[in-house]
Length: 231
Image 1 (tube, rainbow, N blue to C red):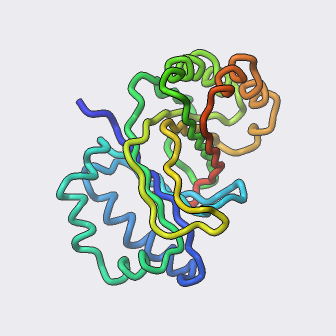
Image 2: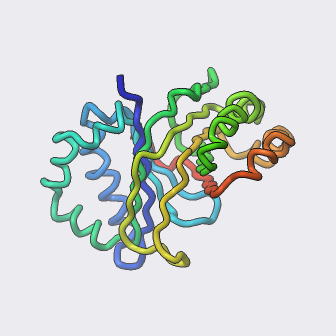
């Protein structure tokens, strides 16, 4: 049986398109056409909460990553409206990342988690380590890092995925061009951001084992996002 999938899409509106046009298209056309498909099990939009770009993100849970290769999904591009085609042309930046669930990493969920709600905080941490250090990296995550994160006030859920493929169109201002994201991503969800600078969070991110793991990290990307709209 195939693993569950995840589609993460980052976007930056730019100056050629108004934000009202962008949100109207996203909320009323783009996402509704996807959430009715059997391979999409949930969708939510996010806005940056860390002052970094891209400003906007959308997160789709999939039955499998392979669903994005089916006729049901591919037909969306073949039959897209003139409105959607124009939005794609005018967006400054659009990046798609497809992931598959890391089956060896348990999904940990608080009893308080009841789906995405507006205002919730998502901390998305992507990390690349050399292949020979991947086993140690996952062991640290399983045995120390996630158990400590669960003590952070407001923690709701942690899920970990493996990158399948990614691509981007446009250029993000202030960058030298597109770079493929790190292989592993962890999605940490919180009821709010209040605990992210507290003693429990600091304890989870400042241990000798963590320092040993990070000595071998090749690249890291950390984004803090807030739920903007659920579907």
